[in-house]
Amino acid sequence: MKASSSPLRSFGSDNHSGVHPKILEALVAINQGHAHSYGEDPLSHQLEKEIQRLMPLAHKTFLVFNGTAANVLALKVALKSHQACLCSEVSHLNLDECAAPERVAGRKLIPRPSHDGKLRPEDLEESIIRRGDQHFAQVRMLSITQPTELGTIYTLEELKDLREFCSRHKLMLHIDGARWANAACFLGVSWEQMLQAADPDLLSLGGTKNGLMGAEALIVFERARELAEDLRYQRKQLLQLPSKTRFLAAQMLAYLRDDLYLEIAHWSLDRAQELEQAISGIEGLHLQYPVQSNALFVQFPKTWTKALRQKYFFYIWDEQQWVARWMTSFDTTSEDIHNFAQELRQQSQKERSL
Image: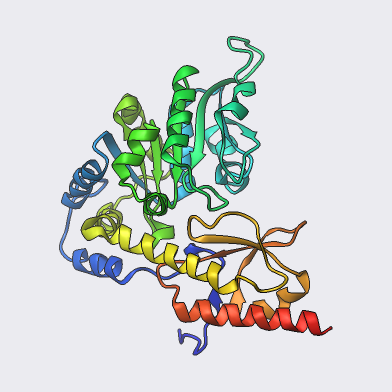
């Protein structure tokens, strides 16, 4: 198929980017010979060790095809059918999994109001009720997203506070880390430091939004190691056991080795900061949340949308307030930023001349 000579540039999602060249190189390099299937290949074993190097308390890593599967598997294996999970009302788990936690895992979500996407212990306390009441779903887990769906990031102190809340109420802690590396880069800390603060039971480690072709991982930590045995079978039952696992492992290994994950995270964060600076002062634009990851949430006149979308794709996050989400990725260029800002400036000038 012949590619368009002038493809539409997208700020819609980091899912819209291509595959990072180093990831493709890794796939080509292993596409020869034979290897054991279902995770018994050498690369899958190497990945296990690499994860444990970056996350010393990691017990077992389970590769899956997508982030929804990682999140749903976490709930499925950790919770019983009468137990519930607290999450943010804007979380991917609550809004963008098409009710998969309820349909596939059969687990109840209890969404709670967040502040710029982040949950606070004091706002969760009122959900710890009716313990032992057989008529009420028993709260057993807290799921947070780092970075949040609004691009904001929990500090180490905030993570510690949530860990203390979970320990006090005997809750398991799951982290949706679709853009986990971005959070560490913004905070200027290692993955190990972030994990020491949060001390989670389970982490959904993102890959596809970070330049991989298609690979995600659900990581079980030492504090919840008893879940790993059941997870082997649950992954198979939920259709997420890859046969040619080496092709997923190769992607994740290439991402983690030689600090590629840091390179990708720094690049996408720098471009987001560059976009924030480029649109600063443009009349009609209103930034909704702090820019801490690779996403900007911007309110602008609805009348600009048609003209903007002729050259750039993006999603409208909030249709009531007409707030768009603009995302950068590993292949967003400074030229993309400059041209997009110029287009926005032109729309602003047209608006003022009417």
